[in-house]
Image (cartoon, rainbow, N blue to C red; front, side, top):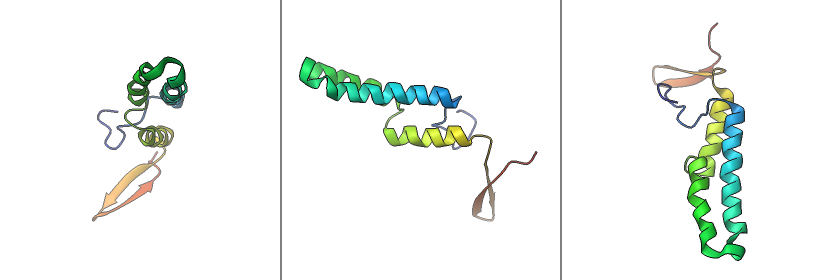
Length: 89
């Protein structure tokens, strides 16, 4: 999300992120499953799947972790050393 450093892969909510994952992984799987049926045209689903996953499956997983942990942990850095802590309040 913009304005939130380190959260560029997070979604607004966990269900929205899971929906993006279902669309992305579904498109990737369909591209290869439909290859014998419709030929190379099925590979046109690959860019759609990668777009839904924001570039790669690992990026989607990173975004899921960020979405789940948003607001529960904050990074605190002092003197070149950083640690995760629960936010005050």
